[in-house]
Length: 391
Image (cartoon, rainbow, N blue to C red; front, side, top):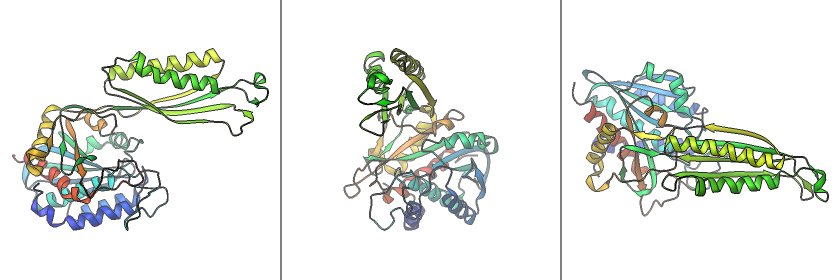
């Protein structure tokens, strides 16, 4: 691996930035401290800055030293998760029930490293827009920035993003055209019956048998109603009912998520889900309240831009660490909203070493590997120099 030498020189500083972000995590649309530090650093390097786009987002503008009309967007997410940290190292979270468990502290730092280098060298033609985005974790911060006029104020001919991959060896660059991440939908389902004493269930209307039947039927949608060649994941993460062992509950709450890779599959699951829930509830005489929300679309890399990001990564990590056959993943990313508006690509960069194990993201013992910082920053910077290298 050959990170850009100048970026490697301030690796220690980048590590300090990243660990400071980790120690002070902020969840979606609350990234006041984080975005303030980002803006201050960009301004200190002579970069034009707008604060408050998409509520707590920051955009920096770097103009090349040669004239050019092309524009390129680089994006990093800044938010943490509402969960407790289980790590005990010195830079662990100082805020209860807040943790950088997905590596956004590292993503922000990598883009800051690229920004510092590009501001010093400006060895390109045209303009780079640095997009520091809030609220990626389920709150669609990308969509909020777009609603706030991101691409009208800062048009991007191409847009690129990076996410760490906890389970790939350090420096492995997984990049290819087509669908790389899934569409994400959520549902909140409340079933309402009639409460009564558990010794006299006939005097009430128990919603639990209905809920159990719905739970089983929803799992069967994937295994029996969908084409086995299509990727579909339906997971129920919450199932809540009752407060006493001698009372039939009034309501049952079920909450979960559905992940699909193709628009047609997404539409089919939407329709079948509603049919199943309402049909079973009607058979039991139970009332239904269903909030079914379409969230992130699938993340689909465009061909030329995926190739461009691959070329930049190859220059940094070498041929042996390029992976172009990674299967589509059922995780989701709101970077997909940018790709609906502009050509671009999303790349995964591995961070696993023997010393830095493969603790998964969204786990209380996860931590971003600081060895990845100059690699990711260099991939961003090389991409700019290669794509905007000519006037």
